[in-house]
Length: 342
Image (cartoon, rainbow, N blue to C red; front, side, top):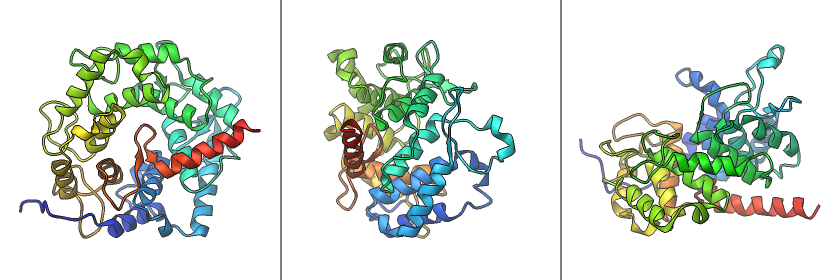
């Protein structure tokens, strides 16, 4: 059966989908306990962008905030940050360590829930960011050795922006890593000499934007080539690489990149919207990677973000570089102002 291109956004069903994720993890998703904080972020920020934060009552918000703070790890050896889950036993403290992706999503979630970040040990977490940077400018996910690529450089930039403190990052080497990761086609890979990819291109462009260096380090011709590569990724929705099918998540990864590059108006919004809505589950809520696939948390969240970037009237607008709603970004700026005023 062909997808229903006239479908409307099932806001309430998607809100209930996110609420279920916050309340429990099924046996099928238990393997994602190592990313539990990120799943919570998808749900909390997703409800915020859906303008359905009332699905989380005050008692639940308070409980969620307390749970996130339990994930904060403070270590003297530079391993501070937020971890993914509370299921790692206290007896295994030597394995407890801050993770850049979880730190980024934890801080974003706290602000979305209305917390003022007053219990965040900003100094220790910035030292944790510093401990994750490699000599080549890129970042590991964790201090104690882990994979290292553009994703974690982006997360380090987000943590620095969220905490309004860039002292834990060597921007010069980070920028150099990004520039070395530009491929022959003008977009970015996960690292030098790797294939251009929609996700890593977003991470690189958003990182430069958060550093306020985008237009300083990329020439006009480089920016034009980058815009063209991104625009060429639209078929109906967006693909992540040439020759691949459209995938819901790239409506955010590529759509947000084009927004940062001031080229969002060049997207065929109608075709993109039709594609995104063709992947929603009209019964349980949620969005899938492709039409007729099972929905999952990341594609549900990024599908809604993609619709927000298109100006879907019932959704909250998005801050593309930090991937949070504009109103959460305004709240974050108010927190920064209080910090600066002592």
